[in-house]
Length: 279
Image (cartoon, rainbow, N blue to C red; front, side):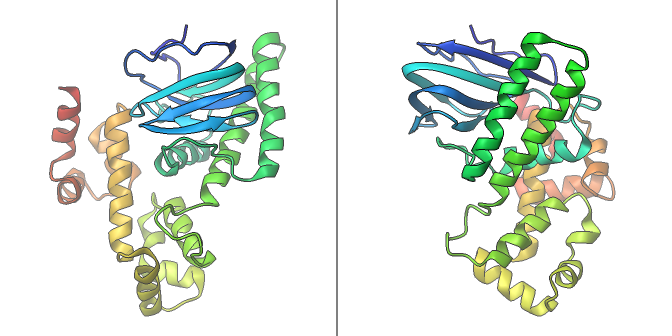
């Protein structure tokens, strides 16, 4: 019943099930899954979570997932294929937000909507998307795109509020703000230099370095490099972007610069990494 290929940039799907179909093979898409009604369990990568009404969770192509239905469940699926395709109905900012979600959502069972008030906001939007899909009235496409874009912003906000995952729950709010700032500006190298971050947050360069390492267990430059490498890796895995396009988008000076950076971080060149994925 559920297809494992997605040929458009994103699609909306909804159905009511008593038994969830077996997975059977890898997917080529990401899914935001919202539970309109019903109960059951969701297993991702050997961990289990009891789901219920108004829960939303994220599945990626790498996740080994299984859903067991306890009571009849009404599912809503928002599926994304290549999130980097241009002119796909998503704004450039929301393509970056979607990438932020995919990079930072903890791929374990559980609802990714941590803010209770957002759950009340999300449900009417999901119901609106279903109505548009069913009625296909005038301006259907434009309304659907607006709702999808807004939904992405809300999910991104919920994930951002609970970043970073490696920090303790009692971590100071400022370090979370610094992490969020780095991730939001990772595409603009001049904005994530130590002096720029220090100026933005009104603290000295020297204090910033010590403060960051104290709370994150690594230097700020190390964190930036690891995060940037994960973005390169994500593009190599999930997009058809050429190497020179990745160079431009992530602010490398040229392909040689990217090759040296990625080989230092991952032990292989971007080209070799992508070739290995195809084998």
